Image (tube, rainbow, N blue to C red):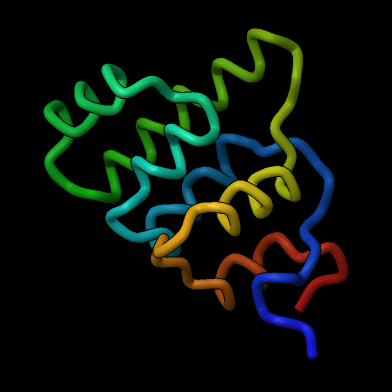
Length: 107
């Protein structure tokens, strides 16, 4: 039986619009995911101090991550993001919402 977290996502690059969908789908342990994808702990601390809600913290963290990947000309795809999310234990994720937005074949 296929798990809801095993639904493949599109291989298109993550966009700034896609990032706006993340705060409603990822919980407070977002910093573990951000660090796994490449945001350093100092940046995470600054984001937490400068932004008072989890939603704005997630938006700012992923804006910074996306900028980093764009600068390296190495896009982070939606499927890459799914693999990173799956690899973070105990991360609170609304898979139904994310799959509805990002699934390869739609849901």
